[in-house]
Length: 314
Image 1 (cartoon, rainbow, N blue to C red):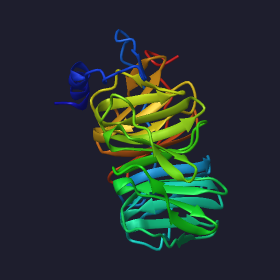
Image 2 (image 1 turned 180 degrees about the vertical axis):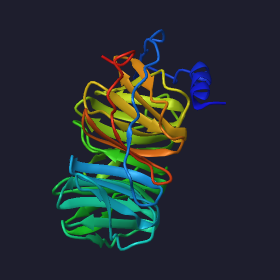
Image 3 (image 1 turned 90 degrees about the vertical axis):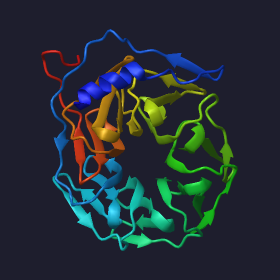
């Protein structure tokens, strides 16, 4: 069975996410035709399974993955850098060409100083799944609610009300937050993680972003929410595990397992069927025309592609 057929079956089988007074529902136009588009550019990359991607601009993109792999896009190629570790790296956040944080297995935290990656001393051996940073702050999160923040030059454990795995972290107009299993959202307030789950939702959340198009979280079974003071569920995605989301403007992009890659505009979900059928695990956007997606077996995609004149997006 082709992936197009599987997605069609999944769309028919997708159930609406449970809602209550805290969740409003947006329904896409189910009658809209499928959109066809040119293939995303596949960027040659060093061999690895890639889990995370971030950047500070078009010529400063960093991808991280298995075996301690770190590669940086310099405007023309992805070039491997010495990470100083062979542990898997799951998350990365690039603040500027001279500041970035990467997080990974067994309590691995790496800091980029503009010249090299330095291994940080941290008070945990739990797997760390995601990282966020600014010029003055940094936060990494991971298994069983583990959260670490850098304060006064040292990494310290963050007091947390959460005891489930945290898989993504992002900033928003309401502050820094992390998402994870059982619909958990933890807001970083007063130096600790405050537990505020998505009401009426108990599935895993694995992606989070804030861009020009808003703040979004996504996860298991095609779950996608927009946060604007409260959570709005966006329906219409197939029942896939969404592992990446980007909101650079009018279009919202989502990526997940089995090569699932789609864009959402005005409630219409359009899938890209020419993407290799590999697990897609991370996404980052510098702007509407500069979106990056990473996945298994060395897959790095750059787009979005221009729509075909015949049947393409307008």
